[in-house]
Length: 375
Image 1 (cartoon, rainbow, N blue to C red):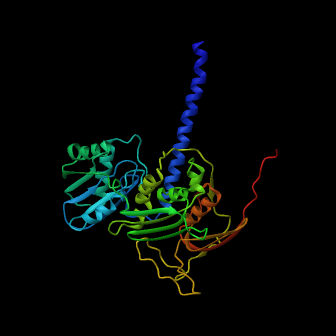
Image 2: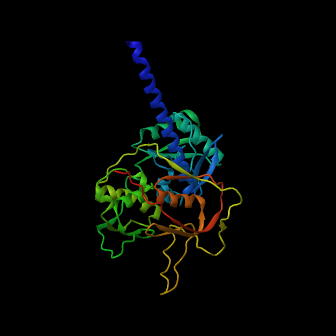
Image 3: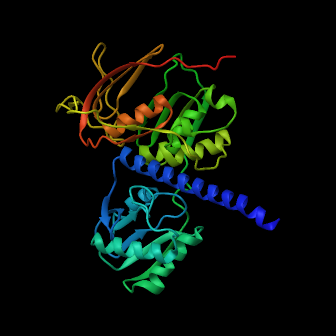
């Protein structure tokens, strides 16, 4: 009897292992797509067969190095680093597998993270001595810093401790009211320190705040996609647009909408974007046809009556009339195009074209009618 029970358990164990491998593979594809979608802040340094991203600014010593905890990228330290850089060199970096850094070996230990940091600082020619700043509530992060100081290298003898930079990422003043907009189009106006959003459903706010696709938000009551709100918020100081549309908007969702969620890995179908045989017929971007966009630049002036508005590079515009759709954009990368297609087809789109330039696009297509099973 015991021998007869072994085979089913072996099959279940094998099935569980295959599911875990598939989930990890999909997660890595998503991380790679995100790194291609957003412009890199910092530089990639080879630490021996893989790269880590680091960003430094300021002059003088000792060099302050910020160590991030949890599942966050190093950019969360940006506002703190900017102040420290006024009197000393300051750096934040993305740990292996986060932000713009490539994945590292599994399992991740404090010693592995300490070695990664040592190789990164050496490869980026960051001068010692170092002041390492970690998050007091992140035991694993702080353990990695202690390993660096106590066991690895003598060039660091100072240890800093602080609360998480995201713990106080909240607006100074915010108003959230049912939408009073007469239009059914969403509007965002953002300049450093101020954020205005009109006619946004909570589901759309979640998509923006956490940088995920709409198709990746699962569950929740029906009203998060059917009720619309206007948001007006003011941040203390000159908070960047990334901070307001990221950590600060996340805090607002928790405070005002009582958002609670968890992350999980699922195996989902994807599309691949590939090149057809022959030369690509895409039109390379012509100089002067669009304006480079900066999230921290002042908002452009409103155009005169009848005059066209500013066309920003890399921001295609989608229009729809029934099943007919059109996409127009200037200075659009293939990665950006794939992101727009993903939102339309509600699946991840992986860029396999190998095209690295930017293009001026005009696309037209008709959505296929939905098929319903015969009753």
